[in-house]
Image (cartoon, rainbow, N blue to C red):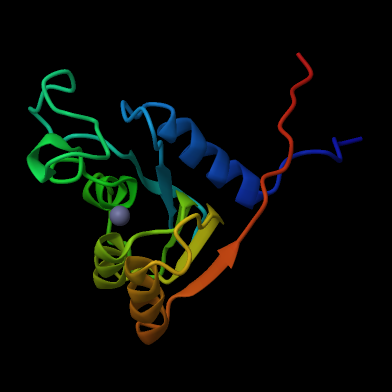
Length: 156
Ligand SMILES: [Zn+2]
């Protein structure tokens, strides 16, 4: 008889997003994203990090201080990296992301033709950029769902 406690597609793809997030060098926020096409194939993954060629050790990871001394001007978000790393046209695909996308990423998501967002946390709910994000998402006709991860255990 086949196992009954195998994980769902949602947990599987969000698990890949979470695993990707663990690659992030950001000490305060690790975010991962996994883009899946209509055939349930992974076509892009990413996490928040500096652009190619920038040394992780010589840029600031601070959240506060003068703008140039914080991480904000330099970091590429997980969703943007997943879109940039994607292997095919993203029209009609779904993005799994551990944290609800900011408005900058939402613009890229809409522009790339992604049609659904699945997320776990939305810690910035109500902030202006989060409200803008929802406005873009709804106007672009992108669906969204918040999920809880199932427990992951293995019999080995
Ligand atoms: Zn973002």
